[in-house]
Image 1: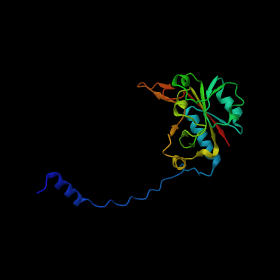
Image 2: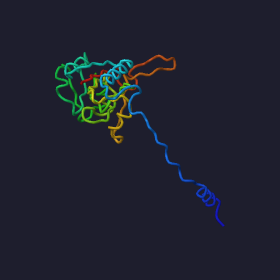
Image 3: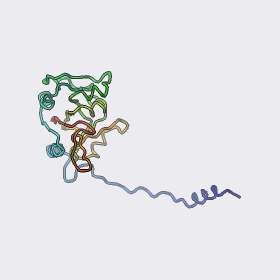
Image 4: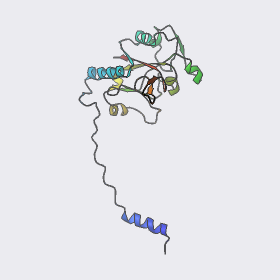
Length: 205
């Protein structure tokens, strides 16, 4: 005699069949109709998508003057460790380090944050940050009103699969697609609810 539970489990095991082999999945690793090696087209799409979101895009050979233009009238900016010092050499504002970590109130009172990124996606106009050198903490990129991100052309992939291939999934990944915005029940667009109200991208060769 066996109890009901044991009998049920025995029948389940007897009825179980080996799982079928997973079918092969041949996902596109690039944006449809776009050659990953056609860098001018990839970068043009990236800039176009960012502009559609309402972000400012500055294409430049030298980061310094472009960063100063992007920061504009901002008086203070958080500058994460690992960011090249020359990137702020043309800007007259006050840079603030995040070591020791600034409080949320201090970050909220800071006008801007300047970072780089780990990768970017042209198809969706997305920046991907993983907290690495020059990127800082997630909180530091969410609370200031303006986020200026410096992106090198080699970091821009046409589609998400290509970008993900070079990322460490164990790191704290943040995906940024345009300035923060949402809409209420009446579909009135409100900026700055979940992050910076303004986003500026400096795109380097």
